[in-house]
Length: 101
Image (cartoon, rainbow, N blue to C red; front, side, top):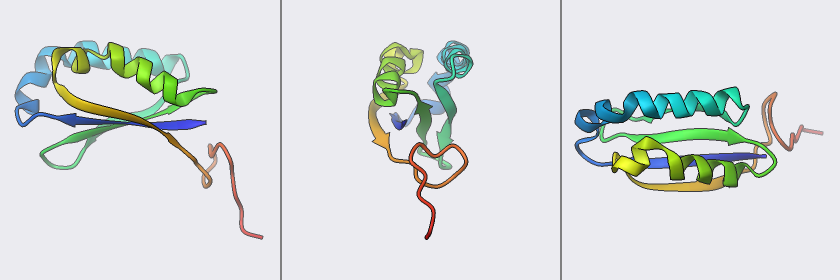
């Protein structure tokens, strides 16, 4: 199962993220090492949003738990977030692959 964690940032994101970036990246790489986080990063050219892709038996709960302890969320760098299930059907790592007949 996969989940998408979407972050919204404030207008001052680029200025304030530096205060918390090392701690945020440490948490993210720890999630990678646990096999939970597949990819993550900023989306767009500004104003930015963030997108993180999680995997696991309960990927949505894993994503929520990550967000609730993420230094970006706790410090207010992230102004809102949303974790949703992602039904993956195409790709080598698709949770429910669907191939044409």
